[in-house]
Length: 370
Image 1 (cartoon, rainbow, N blue to C red):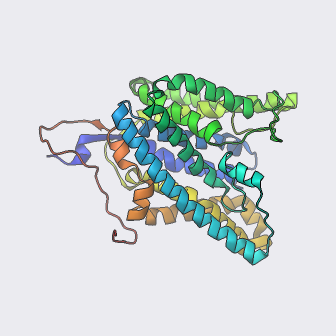
Image 2 (image 1 turned 90 degrees about the vertical axis):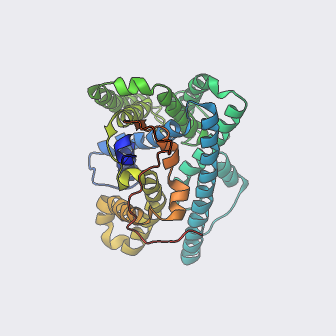
Image 3 (image 1 turned 120 degrees about the vertical axis):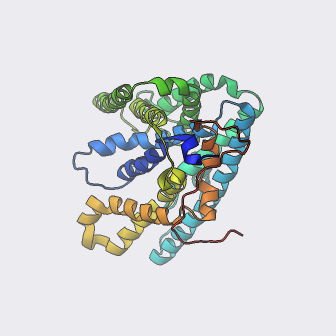
């Protein structure tokens, strides 16, 4: 059999994940963007991650899809448990060190369990993992009941809910138990965009035929739509929340479609471990930034405001490159086996031996599996 790298064609979604993490950094922290334009447009990154997840997990074949979804639930649950304990330990240490007051209430429990709102100072980005876990549990149940075939109907309803509780919440005078809008969670962000990923999976042949320039136009049109929506809602005085803008969805679909349609001949370390690298960056970036604030303090406030977030991203990226290949991280984050089924075979041999993904050498610390 020839080298596996000659047999399988991969796309650019692995590179996209790393780039998206940089946009999430700009969205979450202070970065060198005086105009605020880049930060405003960076809101497409989170939807793009959900779309890519849905694209790779929600296979066209129901039996394969159920298997992948169940595996995704197990790995995401393990990831959520680890990150929850990790962030909890950091916050307990912070509360003890600074003698901060924290009062646990039923409302806080409701916000965390239902709305995916993290109540402690560090780690509010955990909502993404929690929302994804909830969304895939719902998808699995729907698929078991053979209702996922109606996912397009569910998708339309979910998009309406997303808009009415977010972008248009001010215009609708949304007010339920004191909330004037609903921020990103399993219902308003994860589930609809994961189902959009399922739609892209179904339309993969069309994505591959779409010309490069059309994706670019769609991306810039989405960006223009973001500013138009913000301007119109601002002028009308009903701009309550900018997390559910239609333009973000258009940008996310365009950039994901482009990455899926661009093939690359060989896998490399970034492609092979892209989900592990992006996952580690996401988990580490918030604590790293908070540690920078803790150690640098007000003496280097200008640096923190301008380059603090970017520094946190670079540190997290380097740590992710070192740690991405170790067994625990690969088990939690890497979805190689899910993506391999989607790879295009360029040349088919008669050999019955199954094609295995190329394994680049791990240059990080070696940890033996249990």
